[in-house]
Image (tube, rainbow, N blue to C red):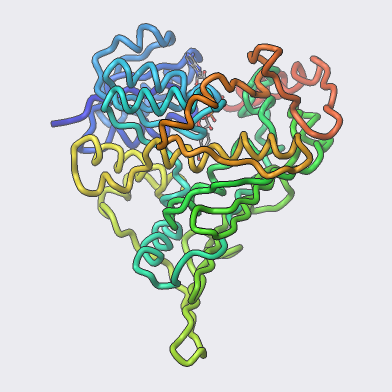
Length: 418
Ligand SMILES: NC(=O)c1ccc[n+]([C@@H]2O[C@H](COP(=O)([O-])OP(=O)(O)OC[C@H]3O[C@@H](n4cnc5c(N)ncnc54)[C@H](O)[C@@H]3O)[C@@H](O)[C@H]2O)c1
């Protein structure tokens, strides 16, 4: 049986469209994006491989298409709203990052998953790099002993691509997010490798910088989350627009008898270094490029994000089909373990860095407290729940800035027709 799949959002969504249109267990049937050139681009990409699909510009029409599962690659702050609705309509859902915008959405999402009995998967592709998959394997084998401290970094200076990814839209989620929102690329792998969850977070941010304000971004430049994990380990998760080329995607895990980390420069997440304490306390260390442990032959179909883009989709399909490798897919509770530190660390930042408890929504008893918690920086948020974009004096960005970014984007479009 093939799973009939639809993809919502065809910008980043093109990667998923590529995987799903080639995967032997999937039949890509429909896609939706209000921006028609992206539909054309996808239709062409799928057509070249002999496939056909129905394209929609309007979500309501897409929603009624006959499909078993939907990939959400729409706006990062709107995933949960669409996910809950699709789950309740009997579809399996896989969501791009981030899982939720608000705590209230988190409660609703968990309840939609539980009530529907359908599969929810979180497409945190950074959990499926060669390095992060291997570190999970080694950790679960007990190679470095119990988790003591971990660090995750996703430093990506997006200044040069900001016009391409925000198109000069004043209300685009990227322009209105706060420093710690986009936290799961750095936090997620630490959760997935060790199986622990953050129980308490403290946040810090750096001030807005001129080069990002010139592009329309109002938030702090980088966000740092410090967390205490469920087993007592400590974590530092750092992400943002700091200056570094190439960007830093880096993970390090200390255990009671050793440590392991990905490569900081050279091969990055394609290599790991491992230290294991020896019996005589002399120790030994190794460094190697891990091999794929899952579906290696199929994985060559998509090298996007070091193979991570393939595995998010593959494990989702495996889970729907009830196969054992489906357990590698990230469920809704773990998605929230990775995602809730973002909004909660921001409350810590706004509250002079006070520690904030991270609720575990596996426990039904604590959901009530958050059911009407709509706090957010999004412009669509009602005034009573609206948070400032930054803990430093908020930059005033004139509309002319967005006009200029849009002009740059349009100029690039003409140079590179989609
Ligand atoms: N995991 C990764 O490595 C990675 C990389 C880039 C982006 N992302 C995620 O992918 C998602 C999409 O990001 P993006 O870079 O494509 O930019 P984006 O958020 O600007 O694009 C979203 C796309 O969805 C479409 N869309 C949104 N709402 C719609 C609606 N109601 N009806 C029709 N179309 C709609 C938009 O037209 C746009 O093309 C985000 O959640 C982002 O966090 C993840």
